[in-house]
Length: 288
Image (cartoon, rainbow, N blue to C red; front, side, top):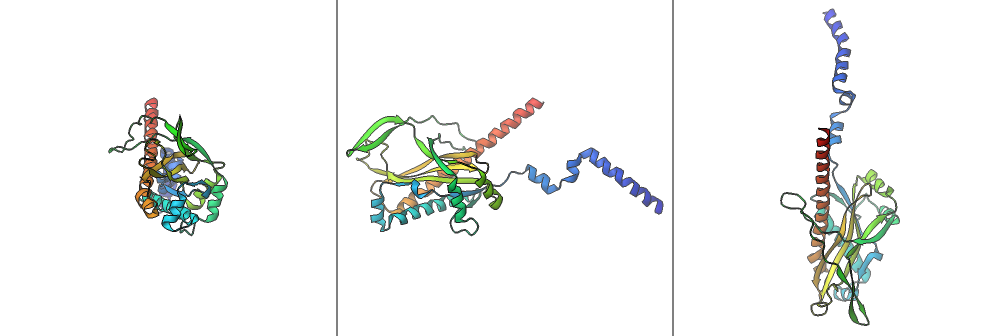
């Protein structure tokens, strides 16, 4: 009985060496969890960052304060908070979502740290795209004709040169703050609400006074944890020119704005996935 056991102990090192030679060091030393993690795509966790007060533009504030019996600051805070809640509701089924509202982990100091490195720049609004029934990104639509720049001078509407529609885009001076959010909270996507507009719609001077309309819009940028822009644009909705009730403006429009932001994120991620697949196919063909 002793001799077979001694022979078995002598054989074990050779079996271990054979496994190493056959499968390589990585296969032996890495755990199943580590191997799985390398091939698994990281789940998304997005943080919604609200706009600063200086980037809230409202040319109908007098009507809003009168109709709603609220101060200008109260109206600003209501709109700022409600758009965050609306975006969170739209995004929550697709990814984990965090805001600066009613949270014990993410603090006001974190928001101050973001604002400290946050800059802005007007850039052209990208062509809006959609995902078809098969989950593929539809072909880009033809770029719309440039809109006429409209303003009011001496009480009259003046249409000037044609301009390309632009939106306020977020520009970070340093990406270190994003790395801190990823390290501390596991956040890997950032939705910046850069600006909100609640104003008269003067895009069509011919009908501006015949059938007055108002609009609410948000300028937004979505970034990854490395600071690379994933998506961005301008989401806007019209409502009657005589309507000043906050509940109507919020209830009738914010979910549409949020749906448009979600769609732009889905399209951007689909395009990135399709691009990665095409690159893999090309690489495979080259290797063959």
